[in-house]
Length: 307
Image (tube, rainbow, N blue to C red):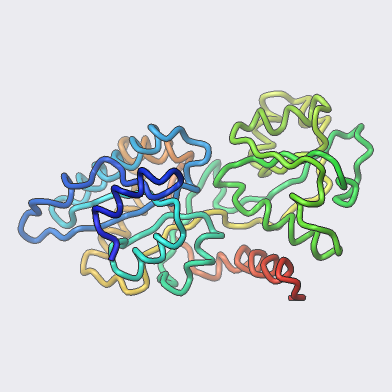
């Protein structure tokens, strides 16, 4: 059982579990007819957000949600960094809904509801293409040319499938995974720290979403002219929000409706902005299938299997 004590102890465990400020306040003294609704976030969703901003966003979401829901539910919000803890929470019912990157959803499918599933929309996109960029004068023309070179990954929830996709591309060609194939593999949460080193010929290549590359190109058109794509992923859903498999509260439809219209209020839009999102959108599980297939294929290839 995932107890409050264990949640609080996790904060002292480096990369362990962190419970954000709502703790006792939201869960005690429920009014008649209220029931707790426990929404959890993976720390993977905050790789480009300062921890204090993430905490504030989660608390703001809970407050906004409580105001919109009235007396229907008593929202509680938590953040997890351990996949095992997330799985345990979904199994024992201490998590009602979970927001994760798609690779984590793949690992948690057995305890996740197959529908409804929510995606985050950013810059009009709920799917992302990943692009492998090099300088047009680098002489690099294919992924094979990166052997022994330098590669920088944009550490961002929207680019969460970049490495699984690239590893799959390399393994299918009989090459090692990216971190073994290149001579120097780096990660950076700042977009400028990923794209500009390639532009200035400090590193050989970078992995970013097409949306991020377009943003940099708008700010500096020469970046868009001088950097070229040598590989492009399919358009994949990078993040997902879902109920636990056995969640059957009578408030479920009301909760879902509130999440779908979160962008209708000023407070809701402010919360979404912290998460670099414009709105949430409901999609069927089939919408995620290509992303799940990429993950599964890469996992089999990493294990030495042929898909």
